[in-house]
Image (cartoon, rainbow, N blue to C red; front, side):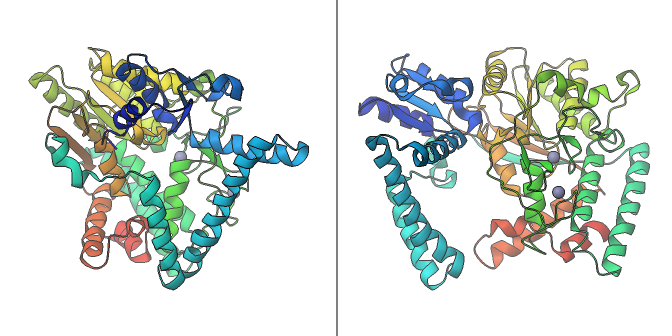
Length: 487
Ligand SMILES: [Zn+2]
Ligand SMILES: [Zn+2]
C-alpha cells in the first residue's frame, strides 16, 4: 500500500504499448481512484472503461475499444461463473471456450499441486514442496514490496504512534460498571458450568457491548431494534449490516464483524456456532456483499433518528477527539485528519458533534456506491473547508489513498494490530510531505485498555518464540478471556 503501484502500472502501460484492452482488477473502493489517476497521469491519453454495476451491460466488442478496463475481483468471478455455466448449456464459441479451458487448467494446477498438499500436510513434507512451488509461481507473476524494505527509498516523512488515555466520567463509569459486572457474572458462570465453548457467541457479544460502551453509552442503550422493514441488522454490532454477507442459516452480518468472531473463536473451534441461531456457522467470507439498502431506508435506520438529539450528551471519547482536533486547528488550520471506527453508529455521533463544533466533515461508510465514495474522497482531498474524514473500517477504508491528511485517529482498538498499521498507511505513503501521527484513543480501566495490554503481551510472546503468526493475535483463548473479564 502506498508503494506507488498505480503510478508504476500506468508508466508500464505507457512505456510498453500493447494490444487493447488491458485489464486491471482492484478492490471496489479503489476503482474510481485508479480511473482518476490514469486520467491525470496520462493526460487523458488512455481511454478507460469501468466494468462495474450498471456498466456491466457492455459486451466484448465495446470493451475492446478501450485501452484499459477496470473491474473488481467479485465482478470477474461472477462473470466467469456465469459464462462457465452458460457454456455447459449452449456450447459457446471455440475461442472463448479455450480461454476458459486454460483457466480451468490453472484451477486444477492450483488445487492438485498447491491447495490440497498444503491442506493435508501444512508446511511439512509434500506441503512444504507445494509452498515452494507457490513461491516460485508467485515470483514470476507478482510484484511485492514491503514498506520496511523501501521506506528509505521512497523518502517518506517520519510516522509516530501515540496512545491517548482518558478516564470515564462518573455517569459513564456507573453505566460501564453495571454492564461489566453483569458480563463478568455471565462469563464466570459459563466457566464454572464448563459451557464456555457452547456460549462463545454470547461471550463475544458481551465483549463487543463493552467496547461500544467505552465509545459512547448510546451505542448500547439505543441499540438498533431492527424492527423496520427491509433493514438488515448485524446482531454482533447491532448496526445496519455493512458490507453484509449471509450465512447458510440465513443470518446477516457485517463481513468484518463475523470475520472477527470466527478468528477469535479459533482458539476453541474451527466451526463456531451462528451467534443468532446457534447452529454450526456456515458462511462464505469472500462472498460478494448483499445488495445494499436504498439511501432513504438507510437514513431511517440511523442512530440519530433513535435519539432525541436536543437532549443528547457527548462522551469522554468523543470529547477527547474534539480536544485533539481543536489543538491541531489552532496550530495549523490546513491540517486534515482521518477518524477510523469499527462502529458505524459511533461515526454518526462523532460527525454530529464535530459539525456542531465547527469542523468540516465528510464520511465514508459501507453502503455507498463507488461513485458516491469517489465523490466523498474527492471532496475531502480538494475541499479547503473539509478537515475531518470519518471512515468506517467496514467500508474497505484500508484501500484508500488519502495523503492530504497527515493525522489519523483510531477511535476503538481492533483485535488485529496489523489493521491498525494499515490504517496508518492510508496517509503514510507516496505523496505525503508532512510528518504523520497516529493517535489511538483508549479508555483506561475498561475493556479497551485490557485489549491493548493483551495485544502487547501476545505480540511480545509471538515475536520472541516463532515466526510471527498473525492469526494467533486474533484468537482469544480461555486464558485471554479470563484476562479480559477478570483482571
Ligand atoms: Zn456488524
Ligand atoms: Zn444462524
